[in-house]
Length: 71
Image (cartoon, rainbow, N blue to C red):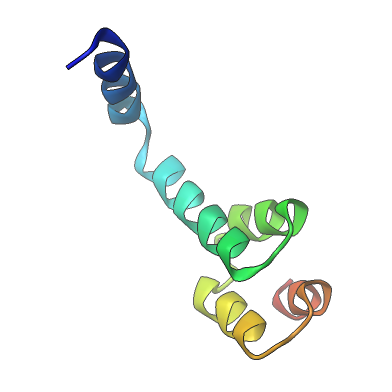
């Protein structure tokens, strides 16, 4: 393992569970089609149901409208 890989691994281990969940939520929202601003806003709100957010996009709901429904 290179020194850079070792450092990256150590930094990843320092990431908290909350940070991992946020990162997963944010990446999921981006992949679903939300722009960076909305994905960040929705990912930060743990009261927003991620599955509902993804379902709304799959159903063809525009991101802005979906965010209004969710928030």
